[in-house]
Length: 294
Ligand SMILES: [Fe+2]
Image (cartoon, rainbow, N blue to C red; front, side, top):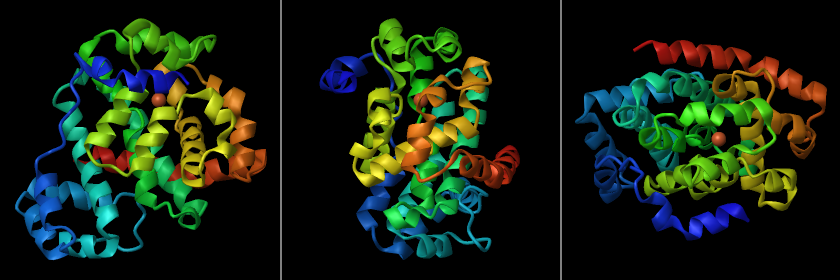
């Protein structure tokens, strides 16, 4: 498969690209984990980080039943794996915004916020607990799935202009177009960043294949967690209007081709999918509103 060939060439691929390093606080947290008290103490030393974490915990996309006001409480409610997801989520925007071309990232964050919210909402509505997938796993996948794009933008100022036609025409896949123009693509870079940041392996695995139409078309052959998260991501991209943000078109060529495979894998009829879309629309709107309140 194409991405395997490219992953084998990792060192060459990553040359010239800046992978944002994981913030140093993670090393400190890992040293004291799983002691929640000590972890909370480290986080509380950085009030801006503590506020960002509480903002993510209380976001509409995560959908906690009650508002959480202390880091220690958040940590004791969430458990270690979720805490690390949330801390990664709290860091990603400020880290990326520090190195890529800010002007061109507005659309990117707008789209990413919608898709992350849709992922959290889909995970709740479809009870992903049955697959051992938490809401924050799904939310993080939404938040990080295109994180390779700012890295591409950081090296190639015309990145978004070059990929725009692939959303519009669909005669060549997005990843193939990126490989052609730039020698690598956002799925590979995203995979390596999430690996470096210690996000759950399944998140990187899905990022790596999220535009591989051959695997999407055979989603039932993947292991269950990977398949469910991949299918959910394709639904979230459609619901969040990713093709509109990046391609300026109101249709999504991947969705046109793959929607029946994806929805039937998830046990949804066409009507069920529209119902799901309606049901999570409010969460997306609320998340957009919350992300603007800073
Ligand atoms: Fe993507």
